[in-house]
Amino acid sequence: MARVNSARSIETSVGSAIGWATDALLRAGSPTPRLDAEVLLAHVTGRDRTWLLAHPEAGFEEGDAFNAAVERRAAGEPIAYIRGFKEWRSLRIRTDARALIPRPETELVVATAAVEIASRLERQPLTVAWDLATGSGAIALALALDFRHELTEGRLRLIASDISTEALALAAENFAEHSVAEAVELATSDLLEPAGERLPRPDVVTANLPYVSSAEVDERVGSLGFEPRIALDGGPDGLDLLRRLLADVPLHAAPGATVILELGVDQVDAVRGLVPIGASVSVVPDLAGLDRVMRIDLPQ
Image 1 (cartoon, rainbow, N blue to C red):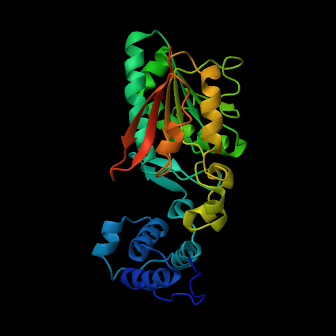
Image 2 (cartoon, one colour):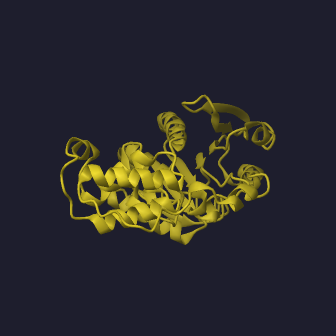
Image 3 (cartoon, helix red, strand yellow):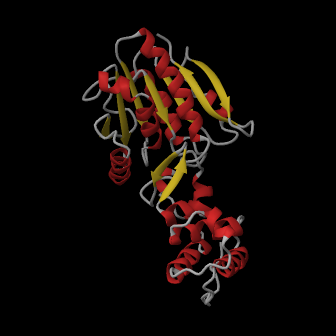
């Protein structure tokens, strides 16, 4: 988005401030200027949007903070980075430039993994689940909360790994804030490289790997201009990391393991061609009917 005009709003009422910010963000190219304005004002004042909309005449004292937030949003910075958190799957996930912002479609990865983990817990004494490229830790956090009892009992072992130590630090903060820090093992690793050596072979693998093409990342449109490149860039066709994982997973995962992947739009056919020989594949569409999550069951 373009930068907002440097002139500052001198309005001090809620209604006037929202109106000014909406106009400024509309000119800057925000696709949701009114919503952005309301959310940012709610953030800096500590009021919820319902209260703000019901009290347009109310004054507030956080004018400088609001102007600064509008400036950041006008420059294209995601709301989640400005506020420092993302509301995702009824959780508040801490977010900043160390990791990708959790997306709605990633909830499908959690739902699919939860069903598979529950099934395995019924038929085997120990299940190992491993979230690759964990980033903010959102997937692992959701699973840790869903299976807190099984983790405490030692029936489930949950690993969250990333090649970025900065991302792992953010994940650790999220786990601590939700009181599951003791339940999740953090590991610095390049995909499943340590599995079968210093870490166990997983029964269930979840992965939201970088799947955006390098050319698209280079354009730096919208949030892509602020989120870490390492979490986005999947190479010329967006499949470099997915290609590596699917080539190596038979060597590092447990026999009969299940791999659950988030994919970009229109990547299903290409990824299907990378699946290990003998594996079965199913696809889970998102709420828009787009195929975004792939489940791969390896042979025994």
